[in-house]
Length: 318
Image (cartoon, rainbow, N blue to C red):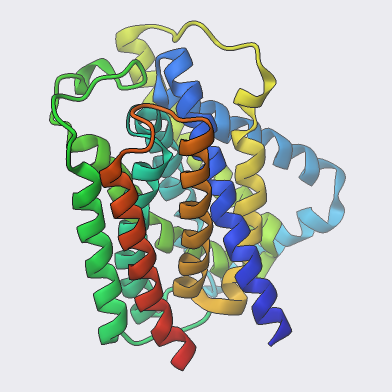
């Protein structure tokens, strides 16, 4: 019971870290005029920190060896190491959209995708906690979260703009600004589940390393294509806090690997959602980005809390 309570607390802390990272990467994307470049910087700095840690720690390297042996024995599959692809897309969406729509609207969209995806992931038993049935309360929570996304879109008109959006997407429908983080949220639950599988074999650091290696590689390929067409991004900021996204990412991904084994994918998603929503509201009030805190975003946020409560009710009854 004590371990479960700590899991709930850490889940909320993970969510708060996600919201702070979103704000940092969104601002960095706006400053450099390239949201993908901001994601590369975030993932790249995280990978650099992990590489240093693994270089000096024999115990961490031993965890990678355990993962290799598990792959050869069939206890892990190659696709279990691809959670970083979802992480890369998530961080890229931060850089592309947060500066335009604000942290709260971004979080509402991510949460909706996360709740829907968690139903599927837990039902299929992809995570280390095994299968969890889909119930009326969980389905209702996911449906309410999708309605909250629609509310977050209310009042947003015009095409996609903003310096952080690639040229090819400018002039597109405004719904993309909400649709991208919604898709990113779909991948979050799957990422947490497969990272939990890898962490159960090689430990949280090994799962985190796999996440950052695959994510950084994917982002570098995308950014290389953008540079070939548009040239190098310019105007990198001098303030050091713009480059802390990767550090925060290492912390909350490693923590998620530990927590998901204690409380499961859905409950981790629910507790992290509470942390994300609370911190995103605070950030949009204290240091607003884009349109700041709009009335529709607040209503959508409140409805998302209701959705989370509905889904959580089932878990506590099990």
